[in-house]
Image (tube, rainbow, N blue to C red):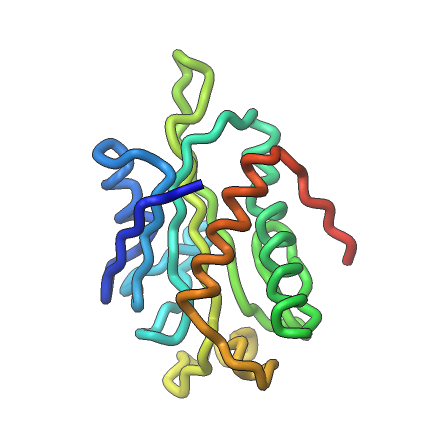
Length: 187
C-alpha cells in the first residue's frame, strides 16, 4: 500500500501536524520529523524528542475498524513493532500496557493513537498512529527521564538506519491493518 510522505526538520508534534492535514490529504499519509518541540504521549504526558535522536512519526489512516479494534490498536501495534525490532536487532524488548516498548524496565518507544469518530456514519474519519522510538542516546536528557529513558544504540551494536526503519515499520503497520489481524502478545 502506498502512502504520501511529509518530512520536516522540526514540528511541535507529528500528531498535531497530521491532524491539520487530514482534511486536505488522502490517507494513508505519514508525517516524519527530526525533532518535536512538544511531542505527545498518553494521558497528556510529553514525549522527549531531541533533534535527530529518534524516530518521530505519525501515520494517518482511514480504516474500516470497529471500536474494539481501535481500542486495542496501541497495544497491538506496540507488540508488532516490538517483535520487529527484536528480530531486526537481536534484542528482547517487551510491551508495557498500554503503549510502551521497554527493555529492562526502561522506555525505548511509545505509541499514541488518536481517532476522529463520525457518529452519524458510525465510522472513523481518521486514525492517527503516533510513534516515537529513541534511536541515539542523548547526553542532554532531562534529569527526570534519566532513570526511564533508553535508546536503541545503547542495547545493540548493529547499525541503525532510521529511514529504512521508518519505511519498514510503516509498511508493517499498513499490512497488519490490511490483513485485519489482531496481534497476540506473548511476553
